[in-house]
Amino acid sequence: MAEYNTANPGLILASASPRRRDLLTQAGLPFTVIPSTVDETALTAGPPEVQVRMLAQAKAKQVAARFPDHWVIGADTLVVIDGRVLGKPKDRTEARAMLHRLSGRTHTVWTGYCLCCKDVAQSICDAVDTKVQFKTLSAGEIAWYVNTSEPYDKAGGYAAQGLGSTLIKRIEGSYTNVVGLPVCEVVETLVRVGVVRRSSP
Picture 1 (cartoon, rainbow, N blue to C red):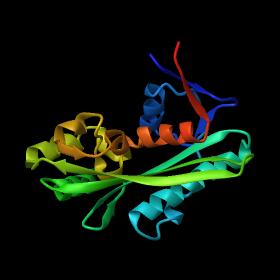
Picture 2 (cartoon, rainbow, N blue to C red):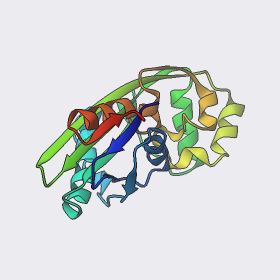
Picture 3 (tube, rainbow, N blue to C red):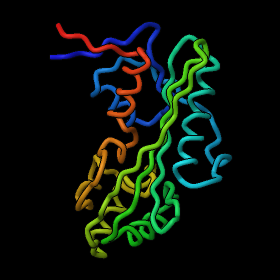
Picture 4 (tube, helix red, strand yellow):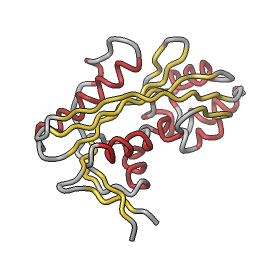
């Protein structure tokens, strides 16, 4: 079975997201978590795909400036429907409104990612989109879900990898992108630039 061997000194994930941490761990990549402190509200101009790329780059570059010999992964995720960005709901009322809006419809999840290393002057950024179709939600289902702990630290107010999976009828595109990181694209980029190499035992 193939394994990933990461070139020294290794990778840094510039995010406190447990979902992104879990996805990289599942991919077999050794890494360190050092969250960025970028103000996400300061970079909200342009279409969603531009916003997520800009934020991912800002997060990665901020941490890379402190660890110039490391490769740093930054990421940002947005949920978009009707041209409107749905962020993290502040309370039950906002979570309920988001779920009503998503009910029975298809929305888009954009995740931007950026891989950068200051010492080699490289910064590679891109964005991936995935279509997510929700089932038609009853008032009872919405009330049940907003009373769980899941909606309140998730863009769009739901977790595709948790109880929120019961709300999703169909996903078109990368599932891991919906969770918070397009793992296939990130690993492909790491392999392409020589940061990660595959080896068999």
